[in-house]
Length: 509
View 1 (cartoon, rainbow, N blue to C red):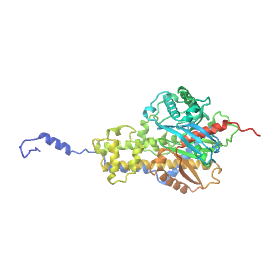
View 2: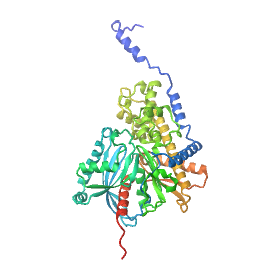
View 3: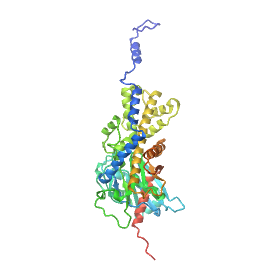
View 4: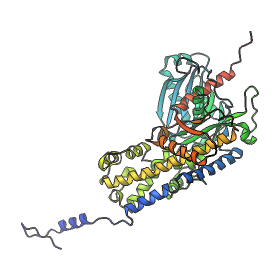
């Protein structure tokens, strides 16, 4: 049709073209509601309690198998006993995680002290961003040494200590796979989480850390290495002696458990000689829980896409499905598909959302708890973090929020199945020694997801209670308890235990 203006009678072909273009709506092959229903079905079809109990039993079988055979999982530490609460002193403590480095001075006052028995005197946190993860060779460890020096320079007592001949004792909580060879040494198995310092693989962590400190002119002696979840057990056991299990769920996931030494195959201990001066009936085991579940947990096409594009596909299958470093990326993959196939964001993906791992867990949590009418808070958050020429509508944000709920719900459910499996292994292998006088078992929980994601721990606890009740096998109730800063505190406790073990007992009078 030709358009004629009443005032002039002239034809305006340009106006006609613009009008027609504006009126044309993109045509997409699917409806948004159809895709949302598919997402919800795929992510939640395996989440009923009976299905999760079946997943737990499969995980238990895998845990038992790897207690006997795997060189990468269920690794016995060199901590046979737990702290008795009498360790005292000030220790340098490091927590090296997937996204942060924490350098601290930790004071141990003793379990019977009238003051706080375990406290952080000073702590400095540094972000491990992609720039740091991209460091090649040993540059990552030199970066750690620089952060240590900066923290110590700010503490007068530590600075004075560093000028003495005696080095400052240090413990480190290491959140990556390691084959420990002594309390102060261990071979790095791999790092994952996007790190590129591949030359460190197979090297001794204790030597690398001490050499980096020497290059930075730091008078430090590394006395103890623990992984982050083992540190969580130690920190809680220092103040609460019934603790035997702890889990970390933040950027990644891991757990440590105090098991009978006899439950592990002798080959797990290599050529080590068991110390005669300590009770070695039990040992603190680094489960490397992130590596479990490849043949246990159902996945979706978005999980498979994430895994295929990962720098280390199949390396940490449980972590890719439920840990904070990957929840946002799973959601992002769904949103990318929805933009292309159902017209989410009117078919125009915000440019910054096209970048892998650009959607973080904090954003997910903020959107999930939005109770404002028309999801106005979510719309504002999304516009601020992902600017676009076609900002999200309330309909768009409803879709986004429902996807987030499905992904976080699955994470909580898979996490709970894993915790149930671990607690079942704990009770079945310890022949009643652990649980005889307890009415429940407490599990120390640390990490940004389990402690900070809205409702994560409470919903996991509710589901865990249902799993224990359904199984009805006489096992104790399992209680999840928050254990903040446990990795740093546990590294300090580990150093204190090492110092106490190396101090000869007083001579009889």
